[in-house]
Image 1 (cartoon, rainbow, N blue to C red):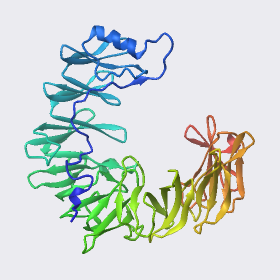
Image 2: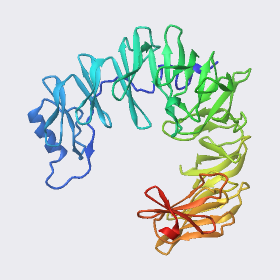
Image 3: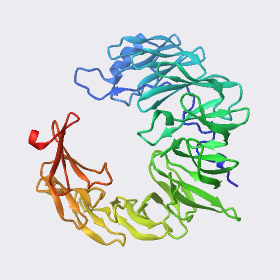
Image 4: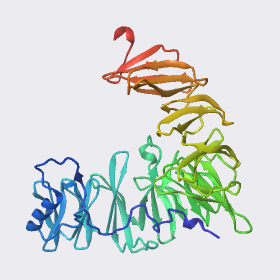
Length: 481
């Protein structure tokens, strides 16, 4: 029997941190090179005169390095474009990240800002930086840190804020970040998973160390959406909110979770050990029957790789169900992607013949057919696959309250159009590359067409009437503008 302990987030077996490998890499290459700028090879030779080594230099790289990690007499530092040593030769190892440096000194781990300023003294056995809604936090560990196996009582972790104040003390044997899919998450709803080696269980804490979900669980998903996440308990998994309220009971054997999506899969095994998998959203609503034979979450890719007993396609990527149908993609004999639609029972209702497709919205889906010159032509189909709005557009949007935004090629340019569900033109913006979108902030009101100007924004209703003008965050009515 497959155990829920095997899914992607079992305590530290597959930590989202990454390993503590002390690799030294050279990054941050500039892209603007003029004739007087030394080439990488010239700069490399110049640096070699000053230092014993420039780690991970590649002669095949023609980009000009900016900051470069260098080594001399067994110690590492970093030089800038002027060859000034702005991080001194004092560290045993340095690893360059996107906007900071990880450093090691005497076997201890610390962090420097990209300008060389000290962020964390090298006094920890583990350091990991996380960012939540633009704010930085640091997970630090001391003691016997072993990320290849279950944490032990000999290692302790703490959480620090951006000013290095202790939010969660050195109490738990592992702290693990959870990615929030909700961009407007309140501060009190942020969660971090903790592991207590004395009971070998996972619980959830807020960022002040308060226990929100007790230490009763075997596993957790490193992603939550709509304040909910998949957890594992007693070799079963289900859905619960971040305060411990159960949404889907713990009766399933196998989860499949992708942090790029707001839906997920749960599977159950029958008496023959065969797993049948279905899809759910994070509100606990079932999106499909348990008709899939397998489900795999691709790395850094939305959708899921699935197999179905009812179709012959070997390579199926399934996307979210909307209006009862889900897009799926296969590869044809020439390895070109083709898109179709499947219903919640696993039946293919629209064959995969389109070069691209958008999800259904209000009963219609945008589909694309490329011509011989690979020029995209977009139109709309209904749920029977009938083309109801012809493929005359260069791009299309979803329908919202009966209207959609499309782009129509005109001579050598493009016009942005708002159309209704019969393809009738509601409004036209003749400027090329105008920034237009449909906004439906209030579900009780008709959608507004938002048009960005150079220093103000105009809002129209679907009858082309100017509703308001906003400049610098202030609403200015037309007669006062």
